[in-house]
Amino acid sequence: QVQLVESGGGLVQAGGSLRLSCVASGLTFSWFAPGWFRQSPGKEREFVAAIRWNSESPYLADSVKGRFTISRDNAKSTVYLQMNNLKAEDTAVYYCALDRWGSGTDNGNQYDYWGQGTQVTVSS
Image (cartoon, rainbow, N blue to C red; front, side, top):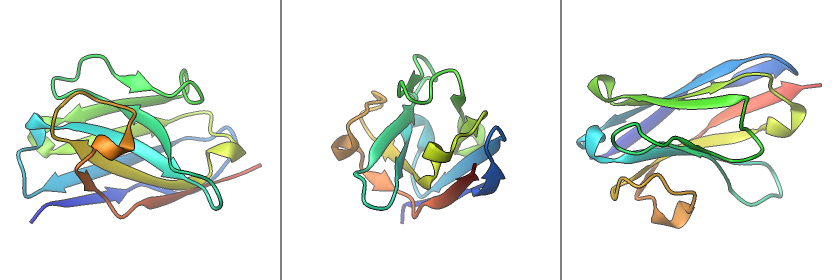
């Protein structure tokens, strides 16, 4: 049974930092490209970041470039999202997902597995 469990969300002031983690189980994590997406109330799901199976070519949305970093630790079956200089508009539920094709795409429809999400709230 495949499981993705996110953690690290919370309430932070604007300009602060959070580090999200997503631990995968029930599959060979190193074969997959993990990604992060987010969704705010009343808005569509939005791509945030993705990284290929071999950690090359991390891909970030323009809205978070220079502030967020995605990384992975295959030995721990974990993907991280380091979020710095957080803004009120970053408030959302953040989801991790896994793409079995390993490409690190921004298309959520190409991801096979999803976590339950973790809430990030940034106060201004």
